[in-house]
Amino acid sequence: MFPAISADKEQELIESLNHYCLANSIIIYPPNFQNYQPVNAPVTLFPTPISRGAFKQGEEVQTIFNELYARIVLEEEWLVKIIEELAGFDRDFTGKLYETYLKAKEIGIVQPLGLGIFRSDYMVNKTDNQIKQIEFNTVSVSFGGLSTKVGQLHKFLNDAGYYSNESKLFYKDEDLVVSDSIVKLAQGLYDGNFYYNKGTDNKKTIILVIVQENERNVFDQRLLEFELISKYGIKSKRVTMSDIHTKTFKKDNILYLKESNEEISVVYFRSGYSPNDFKSDKDWENRLFLETSYAIKAPNLLTQLSGAKKIQQILTNETILKEFLKDDEKISKLTKTFVKIYPLDGSELGKQAIRYAFEQPDKFVLKPQREGGGNNIYKSDIPNFLNSLPKDEWNGYILMELIYPEIVHNKIIRNDQVFNEPIISELGIFGTILFDSSTKQIITNNLSGSLLRSKFETSNEGGVAAGFGCVDSVVLC
Ligand code: ADP
Ligand code: MG
Image 1 (cartoon, protein in one colour):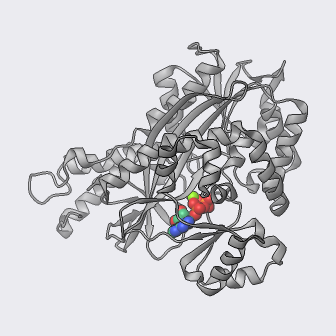
Image 2: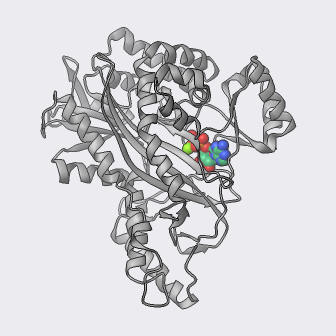
Image 3: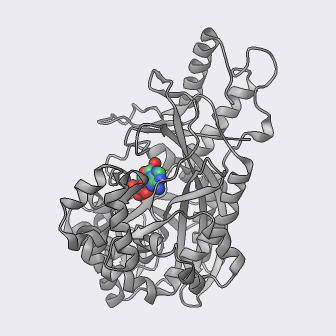
């Protein structure tokens, strides 16, 4: 599965890997950085094998998942009813997002077009090689930029002979996946600009990228912005949530950049997915200001809210899926990717779930309505955690069966350290979709590349920026 190379050769390989990363933007900022001092992003030494069938399955279901989530947003009423209830369990964030949506409704939501830039995450179940969905992300999906670059890194190391003691290549070129996510995600943003301009190629309107202060994963984002300007001639401007009112203005609902009077076609959120992204009431006002502008939001508030883990749990019910997708074949393709997810409410299923949570917690992960890593409760921690909460708060959580992927022995390179520990991998598939709430039509729907992230088998979570995971690439097997 992995090349066996001599210790000398491995030194040379790691040096080449580090050079390639620095030369090709496989970099992040360390904590407390200076602007001129990024470091290499943690990556694997080798690509990790994923079965061809599983990878294809992920690609095949992406446009169906895109469509499903677009339909949920288009059929507003159903989603709003669930979110309204959920808002009561998570007042600080889901509640605030929902409240902001209600205020926007009251003021008037003037842009009928919505842009979804999504990523569906899976692990490959080791017993049958089927992909099983971890979660569906509808806001601020990351690593589309670095993913392409890490695929290119592993291809370079193979092509240049670093994976082999002899002169022949270790991997067949056609088995190495180089994700086209930079190109495809930039195309998704371009589509937003194109349809904002009523189906014309207007290079004068620009993309507003909402970013976190002190963002460390800047280069992943910039790679998409560089593609936008070099391929389409479309400019982008980066602002933080708290700078919106000083840097932009609206005239007749149209959003403009103050410094240049340039019109903004798409607001692309790489921030705003966690309560920490809203430092004050002003930041929430700014979010509302954007929602009620004529710019297309990627995503708008309802699309962001459709990514709630509670929605994912409800959608594991086939009868409900049928309300949104009329096609049985599509539905069966989706349900094959589901593991059991339970509510923790007063229903029969909920009561069963509560028994599972206390009697066999080792088979489960408990998830609140949060994004961005570090929020879940795993296995034997579940009973104590639940006991520490008032029972009427349990309903804000979902209980999900754990997925068991193959454990492999790749190596992780982080700064100048080589970690030679068993790893597991999570496959992400990107997709973009543009839809129109005035006609309830889907305008574009695309598969937009892939991502492989790996982490030590012993760690529960795999956040790359958070520090316990790394970017990998796929070798098909
Ligand atoms: P977040 O919104 O914080 O990213 P996720 O649902 O993606 O939350 O969970 C975080 C991490 O926890 C995942 O990347 C994965 O490593 C692990 N995880 C989550 N659900 C499961 C599951 N059902 N089985 C195994 N691991 C899981
Ligand atoms: Mg996740």
